[in-house]
Length: 280
Figure 1: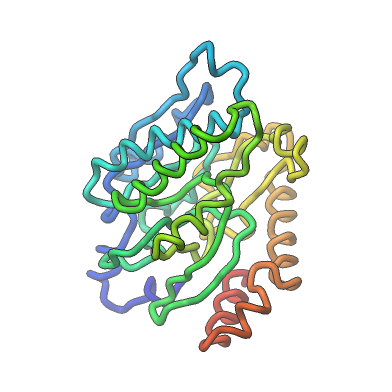
Figure 2 (figure 1 turned 180 degrees about the vertical axis):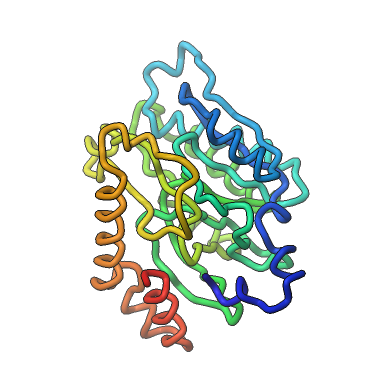
């Protein structure tokens, strides 16, 4: 875990826990069951709400990626009303058991946060602060934290896509979130380890467009709170083993910590330490 989590000041640790820093959890769903997620978050002390995709005749010809954007936008609009950061998760997210006690992946006093991913896909690290918070990149919007400031830019981004792009065209809109928010002078954060797993079944639309059918958390903070949906067709142990090996491979081949980033950093050893320790 990042150095700030081991702060000897117990009061600071408790104050920085997710359950004390998040206003509410919004679960984005279509027809999936969200009962386990709702029960988990409610029992953990979070206020929880499910946002289900609307069934409209005009939606039938739209791509799944476009429909996903529409549903995230609905959650973003709700997040504009919150004073504290909002946690948004998709219905196939499976949190780790100690989720509520884990820390924010950024300083709670910071006012220039864009997005903080709690689950990462194709992650990269850019820098690590003295307190152990890591700026970085991720794609996929399975689980993330936003605030009322950054969410305004996300809504504008969604409206721009809706105005320019045909809805039946597959879009990798989530891969543009990092550059969008950094372009607004905001800082985006990745966790030391993932706060949960993407538990969904293989996505044929991803595969059709040259992407991997599945993506999993490379390394987790702890044991999962319940079994992911993919365990109906894949053994959990071997699925997690493959994800761990892939994560180590990304580190070894310079995809998590890129050489250009390392060479341009004033604290290269801190970056190396963060990258290696998260896999141990």
